[in-house]
Image 1: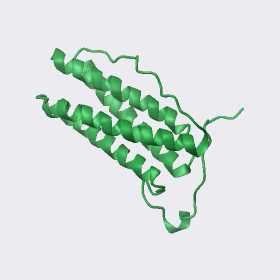
Image 2: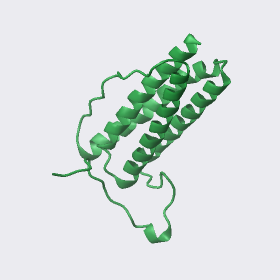
Image 3: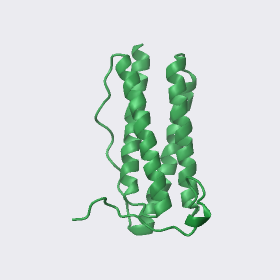
Length: 161
């Protein structure tokens, strides 16, 4: 049981670091559709982190509140956006590559099933990042005819003073 707890805590730490990087990345991605996709990813990761926290608490553990520092972003505008999206795509694949063998070796069906779902959603995130890099704007689905021309950018901060 302590091995399972340690594994879940480590997985949580890494997923939390990824979540925080995605929050930071979204500030650099101003293209409307790509930013909406980041918001979707962040919301899904928030749910995933809650699943992990519940599983850890059920085993008598606590989630760590320390994670690796945020990455440095070079450049501005479209250059910075491309850099963070490329980094996030690489990070997603590396996360899955690192964790998939460990998850497949788990004997606890309930927890391995949860982690498989999270790994699958992480691969979906990687696909979103690759599509954004390719200039796709239908990342979360295609618009209806009445919204076909909708596009634009979002602000890097929610509130302006």
